[in-house]
Amino acid sequence: NQQVKFYDSTNYLEPLITGDTWLTVGWSNDIIPILSRYPQLRAVIPQSGTAIWADLWVQPANTLMTEETDNLISQWIDFCWQPDIAGQIVMLGKTNTPTFINTSKVQGISDSIQNLLAIEQELLEKCEFLKPLSLESINQYEELFLKMKTG
Image (tube, rainbow, N blue to C red; front, top):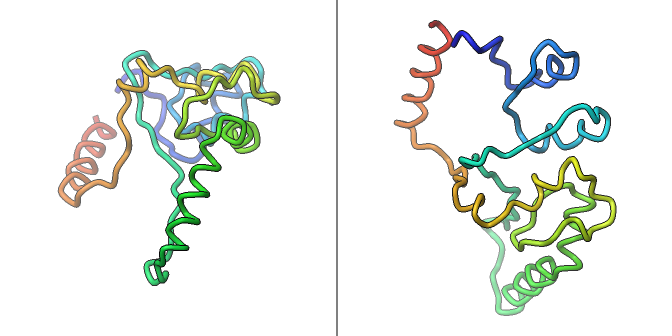
């Protein structure tokens, strides 16, 4: 608690940019865009692992599933997992793909975000995929976070 300057889930990057703090924990979708504007900053994944989250594709619950629909979904996923297409997804979306690709071969990917978009398998195995919390876990989290904030 003595090493924490403040708790903020929305404005945590500004103090880092201005030099008021020298370290922050944040979401890659917040951090990646600022790395190109602030080359003095670096982003790392701890060797002990990190939390992993994912954008999801969903289909409405009332969708009529037919063999044709199922085939189209499979074709779409197969298309997106092709190495060349996955590389374009990484380059344009500045995001990971389910298939490991070597981002150094993808034009438009800066060195500052290479390690965030191409996580080595050994490190990936130490990471935890974020899943929705149970109500019991949410209550426990809120209780512990309040205790931590109040000292």
